Image (cartoon, rainbow, N blue to C red; front, side):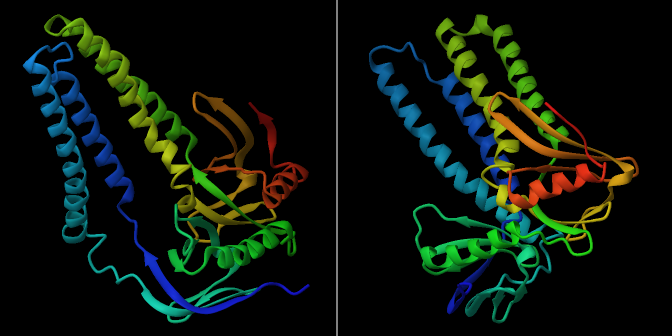
Length: 326
């Protein structure tokens, strides 16, 4: 049976999402401030005409919140474009109708370039869209392909799964893909959420005499969990909603692990390598933890794919992997 191919002129758009993390953080911070204003400015025990005034106040705050979100995005986009050095001189993203060829050698876009399959990191669908598919690549980052998803996705998935199922070991070399994350950083965000919520709870209790019991209970039971959740949403979103952007391709050769983009190059003989499985409130991770004695550290989330299982097996065979821990 011949391998599937795709060759057609379609719209290809190179997506630039450099400041998306900052925008999300600013929007969440702004939302917390608006929620705090709702709790403290609206009188939940109002009667008579004060109920109507409260309803008008809540409606006004809701409109302000929506307008503020648009304003936050617009202001940050303007700042990034006009003030940040990293944005100045950046070439315009590719956006044109071009010929897309997909086959055994990889993915080629006329006018943009060629991508080998090891550099095609992940594909991501767009909710409620049957004609747009986002492909994450190493050299060109995010490409939005405008074509029928049910025709395009099976072809790309075929080659991604084919590469994962084959042992790409050439002279002891193995290639794999995994989500890069930082386990100590993740824990720091979790504890930061607890600390911020606890500090705010203490402040509310110290000033409880100036507010009604109802307002105090609403603040403790609603605002504090919301504050903690908004902090936790930052690390959770990085490994869930935005996980496609954190996928990297790696090559394991003898005892050396390097990323195809050159960001990591680690000699595993001079590192502590462990397979860890951890769980907590709202998360359960299976990951490879690499702690180098001379430089870079690395944590790779594992999804149980065949190439990742092969990597773990090879690491055990060569005596580089410590016993799994929970």
